[in-house]
Length: 218
Image (cartoon, rainbow, N blue to C red):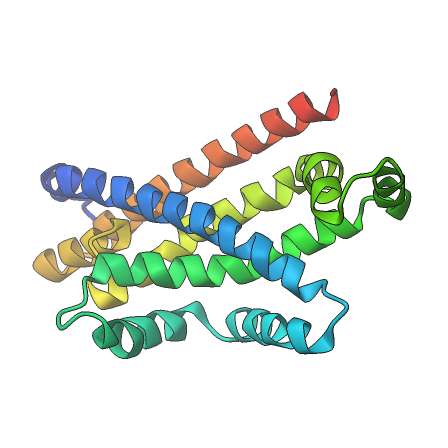
């Protein structure tokens, strides 16, 4: 079997654009997902059942349904309510962010609940409000424990962003499919795409181990 490197060479600029968009989508999703996830995680921890239920439903829906379906619902159902011609890139960012928020909410919840309850009681006895104790005492300790699952979520987002190709968001997988469709070749475009994803995920894994070692010594 001959391997056509000329296909890879021709599509190299497009693969680079796809990598940048893949990383960009993942960064947006992890940032927006962290903001939403913190609010959702705290909401799920509420003692009020009426307050807690909507957050539980949100988490159950986005964790219990395929991201593939969520992308289609957002792009063809939700986004047309606001835009006449939805951007595939925007739809992908929204879908990944909403999905990530559900998983990050559980990361926040588990991290916060892993801190001994005596920490909160001690902070409150010093005159702090619940919000102040959460901000200055609980969250700083919990965040150190959340670094590994946060990094794993980022790795998952990078791989899951490939599903955005179904709505023609020009990320990495989109250009792999474009090369395959033009030349009717499978190995060259898809092996290249797989290798790039592997480099991205291994690099992030190395960064994860570095951060774990750094913060475990503090």
